Image 1 (spheres, helix red, strand yellow):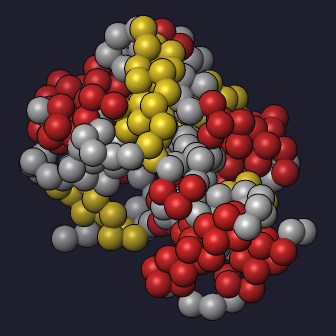
Image 2 (cartoon, rainbow, N blue to C red):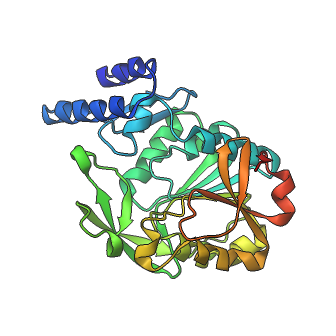
Length: 289
């Protein structure tokens, strides 16, 4: 175990805190500046082992706190235990969702456009003993085939941060990378029971390219539906609903992993669950409010 991995485990014993994470990220950046390779495997509180960059905006939280979106992970695991075992993780990043859901027994199709992130998923899957349950596709999904240029965050020197479509990246400082793009429908997947989508504002384009797949398998969809970046493409959650309403979907938000509230489509609705009406009763959560 590296020294910084051991430090992370000590940090996990302290209460979770944004300030602790910020201090840890700065510390890791300083150690990196001294020549130390800080990208290290760390065991999260649920037992998953992931190779994480403690400097990263997304990875710093799980590295120093030992947790990441536990309600979403728990909800996905419960869904996959009742609705079917196949998760499509669109925008898998470094595997923070994919690895942990696979450890619960799911079969995961992880789609991640950044090559370094995809390589990290593969390495973490081996460390966590789930390499046989995760298939990794290193590409972007969109409305059409071709390529997409992404701007990848590099804050505090982290090399595998979130990647944003360069056409809406604005003043975001980062590394530009061009990646292959295909339509979800072109993947011709054999089964999709649940979709997790986190594509930094490109949600509508991604769904448009996958409507045949969604109509065929009628998955439950858990999405970030980024209310800050989607409008830069002229989109909102109303455009998501325009695609899914004809397929008789209903919309919900988290109270907890086991409680959700039904929502009407509206501009600004994000971090939402979309479920086909016939599967609402099978959702592993109580509808409250």
